[in-house]
Length: 271
Ligand code: ATR
Image (cartoon, rainbow, N blue to C red):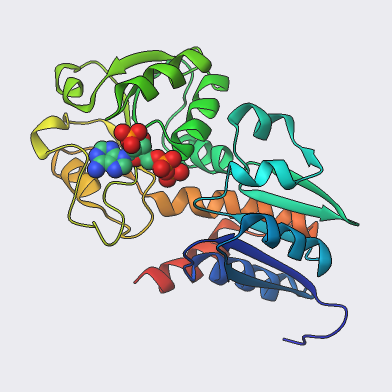
């Protein structure tokens, strides 16, 4: 790879970084043969990081925890969907004009649609944080019949109301529900270093459902391994991650890349 004065620098801003974004983006740019480079930045000051994006003319940046909401006030424009979700995970810099997008919801919907249609499906989602908001938006526009549960009940109630979805209650109340097609963990439970935890126990997961986890690392969380034991079809969070990255790569470089190209690189990294 040639790095020179024409290289388009892209990046990611987060309080804690992993190699996953870098692996996907740099693999894609290499395979597309474009002069792009992706660099993860560990950032403790979101406002100054956005000033850095402007000053260095960084072409695009992912935004991760905990800046997806805060970053909005430092941008020039906001895509209407990102506005409705209330979170930005993608910044595009067009000649100094910074626009915020959300590709998390796209990633989640693409991953779900690989295994099921969504219209009129009964979905149970656990969580009411940033990831849950993006998924709630996607489920709403795909006309799924969604019920939201969360540890802090008030947050679930509020999110359900905002997106015209149903409120289910606290996590304990899920075991009373039998009649659903898709179960989604949109909480951070199960993420390294808490990789031994699951938001539901084996007994609380019903047989023969579709079960998705937003957690990326480990690829098979305890939640998903319980679901496998219950003969469920599972969707690992890494598939969402790839689909949302495909959107970003196209926004930054104007070029489409293939799911399989990113999957191969990512699975190598997650091994
Ligand atoms: P993210 O952007 O990853 O969604 P977040 O906005 O901090 O992160 O939201 C984290 C979600 O995980 C919330 O739904 C949170 O529940 P609360 O609203 O009750 O805090 C959920 N969560 C985190 N740790 C949890 C735990 N140990 N048990 C149950 N839910 C948990």
